[in-house]
Image (cartoon, rainbow, N blue to C red; front, side, top):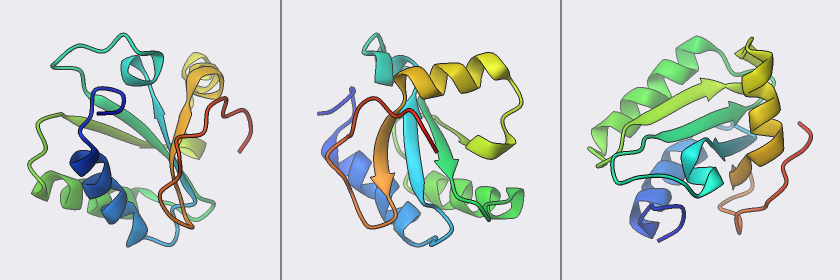
Length: 113
């Protein structure tokens, strides 16, 4: 397991992301990225892609819900986040868990878009 998640759950999430070419990257943040998650902790993910919109976000959320994963997924679009503290948190501790070209080996130190 990585970040308290089973590999099959990570694969399921990324399989949805692969269906949407507008998604350039997905960034894991919050307690799972910091390593202080608990059993019931949600999965905080923000998506990066110049043409992502709320319509696409809702479709992605619905597909993720269909997997009935044991964790709630809190999904956002990075460029739509207005909270400067949250943006700083994501830039500081965010971990790339998906790139458009495929599943990556969880790069650390995500600093730029």
